[in-house]
Image (cartoon, rainbow, N blue to C red; front, side):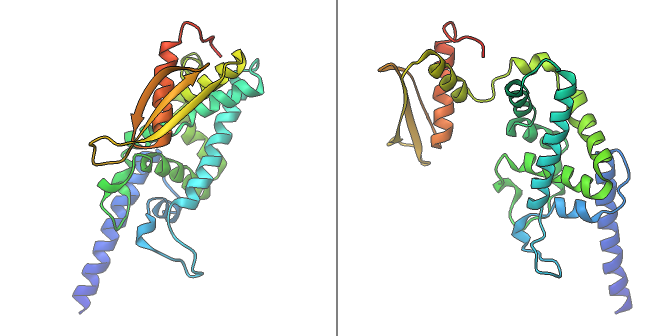
Length: 246
């Protein structure tokens, strides 16, 4: 019996040690407490609860990390672009913390490899990568405070990826861009969406984009939101010569 208990404890110690070393390698510094990081990589499918009955998973840390990331990026842009007005700074921050960018960051760090879950990781959506990245930032804040959190964001996000000139040329949402342009030019527009009755196994939605009673683009996708963005992108490139840079 004693041998069995020692083997179990030894197994847990080895597992925790591997997790600690992987986290330390990602962070670039030694955590004071491993507990926040364990929570940051715990999926809700495990249905874990603490002593008070509160759920133990990464979702609350994701909320905290999102706030910390936005705060640090906002501060950076405020200092780097003194001539930028509120609207400009808001758009630039949105480009840095876009879901697509956060997903890429989470993928690069291979954060999904650390997740504890009761469901196959192959079933996760693409946003799991960005969610884990935000949860990791939240864990850093709880473990080491703002200074370490800010330092990590600079090293993982700002220094390698944030270039003001490049960001200015990026489009986050073609739909938002088209709507803004239409409103500016006083053009009437309408997204006509209908369920596609094609032969695909998965349900698709088709959309026509009307501008001033003329169909300027068509598209289809697996969700209304994706279809609208896809048709907006096609319309943008069709009308690019007419659309002023916003």
